[in-house]
Image (cartoon, rainbow, N blue to C red; front, side):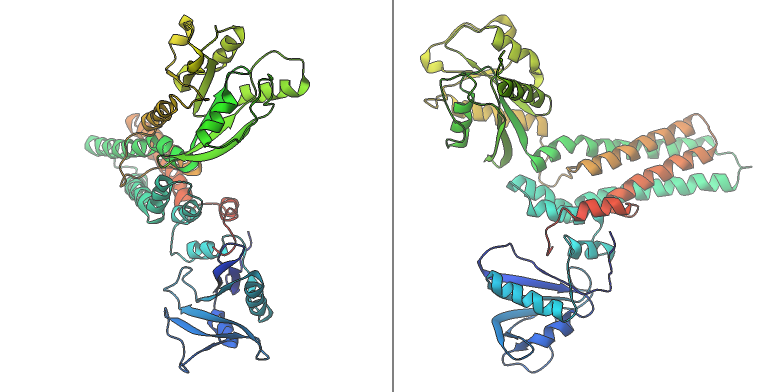
Length: 457
């Protein structure tokens, strides 16, 4: 990622399409100068005051009126990027926005790359990398709970925890390196005990944060739920009932669903991803065979499996085959068609938590939804709103590396190994923590992160 921080960049900062207001944003040394080429404030001849919104006209160099606008200058360092930042708030039509951007580009500005405004905020030290990543998570949040987690990270809740780990490990490293500088002075037993206790305390706090990952991941990515079972047990009817719309085709003909169908919805503030699958059975249809294989492959990668059976009919080998693929700890047995009667469940099915429903009459659906929420609550823990949650896989991997390095450091002290070995482990821990905050993140990681952003942010 080659970034020229000397450029003045420009982009449309609002979503595509028509709207009442559209915003064009500039950042860089020439931002205010470029604004003055085209903007004339109404009723004010004095230079624009920083962080004040002005009404005026945006004109072409030849005097042609482009639009009536509001404009604001945010002078460095009190801006999002810590550079000179300008925003032009015009009418939200694509033609007007495009003309405003084109005039700035004609005057020497460069079109911003995805995430480049936030990247500049990071490079200029206004935010660390973890807080920068939270920006895109706030934008993409699919529930209030996920948004709260992202906002907490954007405010620096996670960063403060990581900086605490870094400071503690840095102090340990300083003490160990002092022993390297004076090898003739053997580390006293009391000092070794202190190093062990301190490192163990930090490691335990890392464990708490690592343990929060499943909660954070579920809030950020949502709970994936697979509707699974043999043909004609009501899987597609259940999906349509849960979604409140006819999303999948319902038919008495077996094998109607031949591929996975995915939809998202929110349940009590919790993002869910619902996946309907092909019925599990022996078939000679090559397309249906692929659908069955995909359904079985999906089982291992989801958070919860709704194993649907027809409760009005005796269970058969196809039901047993479907059950054998499932993990009992992540499976909820859904006994469908209870309005048509009920059969006695074989003993192997009674070990799985179950709920009886009728997807046709909606009987028992609320109970099913409550069980799903209960499953989510058990797996997400009971963290409060102020709890720091780890929600990004990249952060988890880096923190895991740091925790493991700290554990190896303690072993070097316990085994009375040369201090150089311990110092090496502590430096590795600091390197891993730095990848979370951005202090040691390589360029390819930065590029991967910021290309996820929309242009204009």
